[in-house]
Length: 66
Image 1 (cartoon, rainbow, N blue to C red):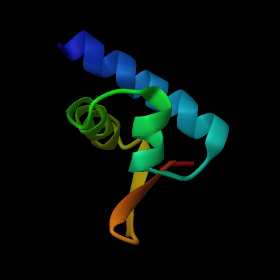
Image 2 (cartoon, rainbow, N blue to C red):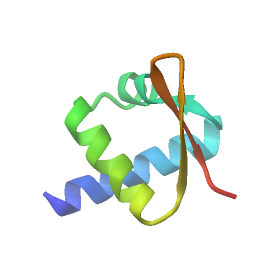
Image 3 (cartoon, one colour):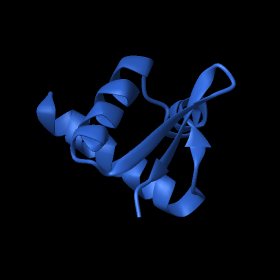
């Protein structure tokens, strides 16, 4: 399971690198993974201090740290 979460975290990183700041919902629908897998992968990226998470309009916006 750790390998899958790491793979999805990589996909999210590449998506954010290409698109800039986006909502969690946009990530979910663009990549096609379940909420659980998206949040696990975002947690992975947050733990590695690779992303910014900002609450906005009843959701979260995600971007890469510079």
